[in-house]
Amino acid sequence: MTQQHVCSPCSNLELPLSSEEIQTTLKTLSKWNLKKDPTRITRTIIFKNFIRAMGFVTKLADLAEQENHHPDFCVHDYKKVTITLYTHKTQNIHRNDAVLAQKIDALLKKPAKSLSQVVANVDNPKKQ
Image (cartoon, rainbow, N blue to C red):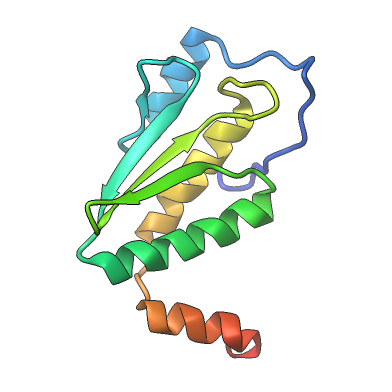
């Protein structure tokens, strides 16, 4: 899957990824793991500080809205963000989860902004 893929609406009739497809997908992702509950993939990112962690969460929220696919996430230990992906409708891992994981990986490769820059852009989107 490439950056051009987008998350698409799914139905309860769609099949989740098979175990083999999940393992193949994980090999293409950076530091994502299958949870003990094999219906979720997770990644924990450790940032330099709380401000960077929260700046990332803001970007993650924007990405999730663009893709209309929303991960579970938790900010903990003041600078760690754990992301859990699965498709809520099917309660399992779907192609959309792999697409979003790849886009999150790409987001992490972009230069970090301070939270004040992120907030300034939200307050005044014309300056983006």
